[in-house]
Amino acid sequence: MSRRRKIYEGKAKILYEGPEAGTLVQHFKDDATAFNGKRHEVIDGKGVLNNRISEFIFTRLNALGVPTHFVRRLNMREQLIREVEIIPLEVVVRNVAAGSICKRLGLEPGTRLPRSIIEFYYKDDALNDPLISEEHITAFGWATPQELDDIMSLAVRVNDFLSGLFAGVGIQLVDFKIECGRHYEGDMMRIILADEISPDNCRLWDVKTNAKLDKDVFREELGGLLDAYREVAQRLGILTENDNALATGPRLVQ
Ligand code: UDP
Image (cartoon, rainbow, N blue to C red):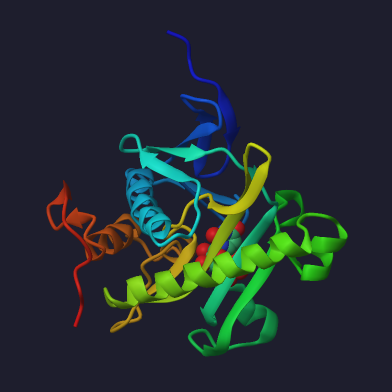
């Protein structure tokens, strides 16, 4: 039996060649990193939870007509995805001030922003993913103005969907990061959502207690990262209280 070919290995995921042309297998690792890889830990079970949470979100986005790379989950740690040409941008949408924007602009964490704000960071570990403007993106040809429009409208649709989804289960969506790619079908190309959406790349605060249910638990060494991710999965109805079995849907919090 031949080993399948590894296409790319990142900090939290591995991409393998897929079973047919134009597909890849996205494998979720248990590795947690922060501060551009300076802190690293293996947290047993994180990959399984992120695979499930991301599947749940991407399936619903697909159903709403938001185009994504997600095809189907293959097993506990892997999903089948469409191959895309990744656009080298981290697209961050913020609803409430937290993290880097607080340091940069002197905002009090938790302040609701006057409106949702979209930011772009250039994906380059060696440069520490610098904040960039639309001018940089189009001038350097990382995306065309039309592609940038498509990316921003995807970001807004994802924000609307996620804000409502999480509000319904007692969680405030503070901010999140997405990545997009070019998907080619014959001579057609369109921008679709790629990567993952999980507590690794969102800030999720409990509405009542403001408890953090995301990767800040790891960044700030608060302990119990897996419990926080499991709580998100349980509220979304992905895991029952007894863990692994599949349940029916989100549990509404009054
Ligand atoms: N984020 C991410 N990957 C990154 C940087 C940020 O997923 O490489 C997410 C992060 O989890 C948060 C949002 O993007 O939900 C905004 O992050 P921020 O710019 O505040 O950076 P941080 O404070 O995490 O360094």
